Amino acid sequence: KKVEAQKIKIPYELQRDLSIVHTYILARVLVKNKFHKKAARALIRVARNIDRFPAHKVQILTLAVLECSKVGFYSASFEFAAILVSPEYRDRIDPKYKRRIEGIVRNPLSSSSSSSPDEIPIKS
Image (cartoon, rainbow, N blue to C red; front, side):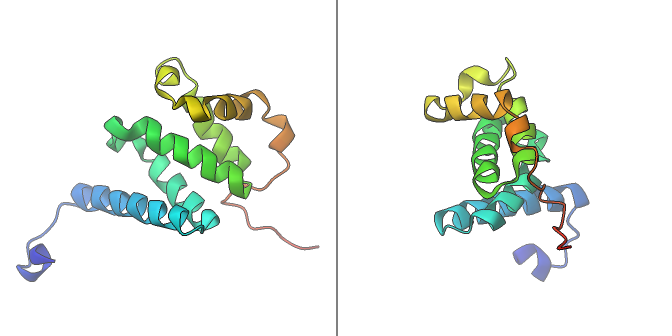
């Protein structure tokens, strides 16, 4: 707000990063208030830009996997779970969720019939 009041030009990259951080904060509020579908969509946006937040990569991906699988976005859930079970991050997954995340990666076929968040279901 202060920057806008002084009419200082914000670099695009900084503005994008702040927007993604804002989306993550909103997603956490949405999860807390049980708006899981909106939270999953927001977390997908954050998770697709995860390289900007290396210190919180595992926590963000874990939350994205759990929320996406909860609302039926199984392709996104599988995508992020596959990243988490790579040797680089596997040992940092919270033990409480590790088994569930590994199960999502092991059984992608059981959930492939669901739509992705980018698809709009059409009634025929």
